[in-house]
Image (cartoon, rainbow, N blue to C red; front, side, top):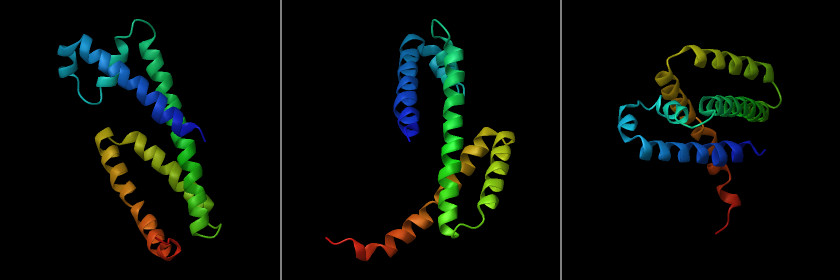
Length: 136
């Protein structure tokens, strides 16, 4: 349950500090980097083990995200469909991991944003269903 803390607070803070230091130390390189290569370029300028630190951080972030979203998604799917179809969810989830690994990165981000839009549907539905439970 601490994955959100480590992913969001620790990894993002370290990345932000490295990016800020990179921008201050190498302003000309900062401008030439694309959004995708900026973090790699910044970590490569660390005096020791920059590339290795970034690789370990990305692997940890990816693993925590894959396991966490798999679990939360399966639990939500199980709740919505009364315990049936857990294998269907897991199969679709594994297929999407593969698809995300072979598609171009920009397309993956666009699809992820679009699919996350559908998280609004159950959230809005539950807000409407629970509106009478909240008293001002």
